[in-house]
Length: 439
Ligand code: NAD
Image (cartoon, rainbow, N blue to C red):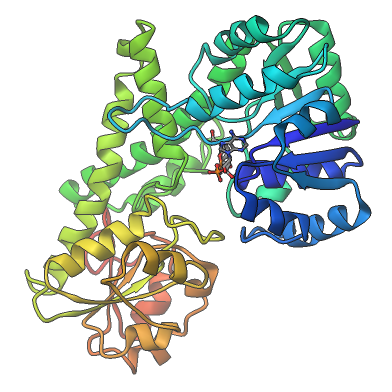
């Protein structure tokens, strides 16, 4: 099939490469001419396992091309995926839909009859219907559908090629048939396909994000209770998660979530629910948000206690800057929020991250940065483990103890092997775990 992908950022680049990888003929477009030039040469700055190879292969095969011209896109195909950003509005939590609206308006001027515009961006419920009316005013026989994207940064290609489900919100059999054809190889491989009305499809994405955020904040709330009771949240999480009705995924106590999508999306969902008169039903999301933010300040407070009640003159090593492992993205990174607060309160901070150093430096130029773990920890009074990269799990605690000033570790992600670190002489601490505990 022929199709276009409009907006070749994170989601669009991955979607375009994967669609071409499935054998479709794809034209990607973006307003960013530099990005289009790089992609045309088979290059991307996104660090996603498998993406560079897939992009290079599909561009070389001629199945994937890029252009800055929306008019060219409109004449190239009848199916158009829209993957532009939907950031937060400057003065509220609601989603800013100006990029999505602009694409639909511009496309409307050029579309071929019978075109299908398929949104993949995360949008407030009701957007597909609104855009459908907008497009109908500009062009006849066209349709807007929604196909929310569930990719996770760090495993984006795998998520796009082997999704756990495909959800489409459509208003005609024609649109459903077109989307079934797009995803045919995946459907044959048994991927569940949910075809529904656009409002339900839009809400699936919002509900899934909100559920995951709630699960993270639930176990972090339990960490606060464990702190008050002298109990151990890591054991509690494992035992609660062993219940198959609950499950262990995302029941990981720690520093909480961040990133460019998760927080903005569930805040936008709460704002939209308010607009349509269902605000009370999701009022708990505000508490989920508060618990999540509190983990950052509770981590800073615990770190301060560990350095004797003040950071003044203390050297603090920070392991991790990305908002999660496997990504170089530092947008709303909990790790950097903690690092910046610790520095602001008087510590000398040195940050290490396997991939996100350049991005971190661009946003927080005042923090110190070290090219390797050893240099970050040199003469440190305290080591903060803030992003759970696998390489931090491989650290030899005995060797690291020899370079720090004090073998004092705050494992804010609760995933280092406490027994190993303690037996190498480290004093290991975490939120929701008793001091000197054994787990
Ligand atoms: P992004 O900022 O990386 O990319 C957006 C791209 O759209 C940019 O390249 C921008 O230049 C381009 N663009 C803006 N206006 C345009 C126009 N008029 N014509 C053509 N291109 C235009 O954003 P992203 O991370 O890819 O996210 C896109 C959407 O997908 C958002 O709604 C986001 O919430 C959602 N989403 C993101 C992820 C993720 O992990 N990044 C996952 C699932 C869903």
